[in-house]
Amino acid sequence: MASVLIVDDEQSMREFLRILLEKEGFKTDTAGDGEEALAILQEGTFDLLISDIKMPGMGGLALLEKTREMGNKMPVILITAFASPEDAVLAMKHGAYDYITKPFKVDEIKAIINSAIASNSATENQADTDTESCPGIIGNSPEMVKIYDIIKRIAPTHANVLIHGESGTGKELVAQAIHQQSKVAANTFVPITCSAIPENLIESELFGHEKGSFTGAISNKAGLFEIADNGSAFLDEIGELSPIIQTKLLRILQEREFKRVGGTNTIKVNVRIISATNKDLEEEVMEGRFREDLFYRLAVVPIRVPPLRERKGDVPLLVDHFLKKYSAIFGKDIRELSSYALKVLMDYDFPGNVRELENIIERGVALENSNIILPESLSLSMHRQGRLHQDQQQLTTTLPTEPEEEDIYNLGLEEVMTRIEKKLISQALKKASNSKMRAADLLKISFRSLRYKVQKYNISG
Image (cartoon, rainbow, N blue to C red; front, side, top):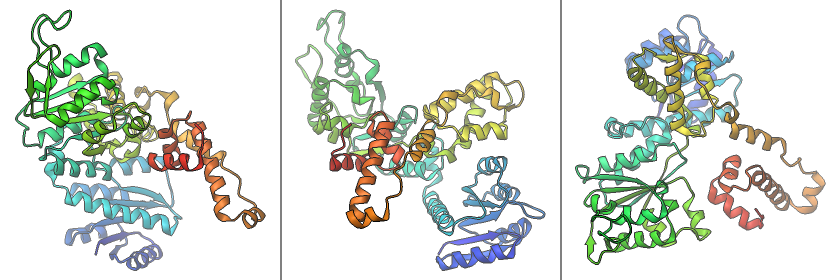
């Protein structure tokens, strides 16, 4: 049974939350201010802290900071009747799980509480060494905790892994972490970006070549798979491989052997293949651009790396990491962003993901002359800010009108809902320029669900 500490100077709110939580099966304790809450926390442990922000004496933000100084990592939900952007930014910066305003809906706070408890359980089950063994990967959001857990479980195996996610999400860092936690960590990790090599040279890069096999082949050359023998080969942007190379790669996966370009000797290798793509390879398979048998060989274990907009809670951690990195590189002592600068970042969709955030902070540190980064030093791509959010708002304004009662009775509820769903999907596809991936994001459903519904309703792209 999870335990929750409720802190509010209003007795009615404390009692309301206590009754609500105990009905949900939680153990509760209450405090009327921050000082009382700290005394209770020193005597026992809790799975969640819910605190008002504005209280006499020690407020919620100060209480949050004190709990972190004590080394307490439990999730903290802050509530207030006086919402302000500055408080929201400070709350996130100090590691609050969520920030909600009064009056709130009962279902809303119940969902947030259950989510916070679940994320805390996942974090507690994740050993501290897991994040330490994933160098360069920053984040403690539930989405990242799941990835750490998958890496821990599959790294010691020899299973091939397919990492998919948007550009800039850190797919190569995940691949490196898998190799570093594997049984062959002491052996070679060889990365190659498939799209960066001309098509006429990719075969030689992957499989090597014999002297004289083509113009410019002045000596024998070992390819990627020979170099990575008994180690790991990382194939980034694997969706760019031509059908011929896909066929040759399939043979390596099936037979663990190949021949160099122009060679006659069969070379046997024992190599784990970790691949990555920013494409939806299942859709590529359906469109006939990627071999189905190769896809299933590569995707024995699929890992999805979420875009930064889906794990905004990690932004303050990433900002702190990059500030330290580039302050050291540029010989500056910049320790933080102004509260408004951080709010600007929290409101940004980061189409370039973590890579874009790193570039933003690098520029900010380079441009700033004080010890705190101001908004004017961020140099955001303003024309791209909030693009997905704006599209969702525009989509909302074009929702089908509420059906007439007469229509429901004449057509039936199922038929009316079908027509509304078809219209919404068509609008989303139009808004997304017929990109099913983007339309699924707009509608907040999975790509597979959207694809099924498009086929079901015979919606033309």
